[in-house]
Image (cartoon, rainbow, N blue to C red; front, side):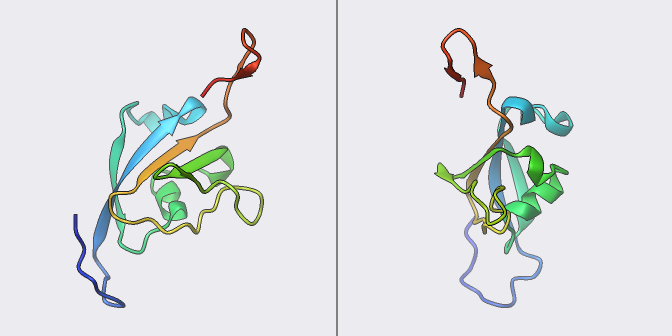
Length: 107
């Protein structure tokens, strides 16, 4: 969805982002395993998206927006103030399980 270049009067406009949940978050709140298209306000943030799907930020151990890590927040958690734009792909993961066979995390 292309949004017009407007400033302060974007109230009521929405954007669409693709949400992908991994590891312990994969079945959060009964969501399907497939990527979900989510609609949020045009000035929405990662925190707004988390509130919409009722996912506490403390449960998210890794957050990627368009493949870029936005995990390190000021308080050591994820950066919930990260602004989202139309068409962004948001990937969220819970703790990554440990693979005893190979001795490395499974991603």
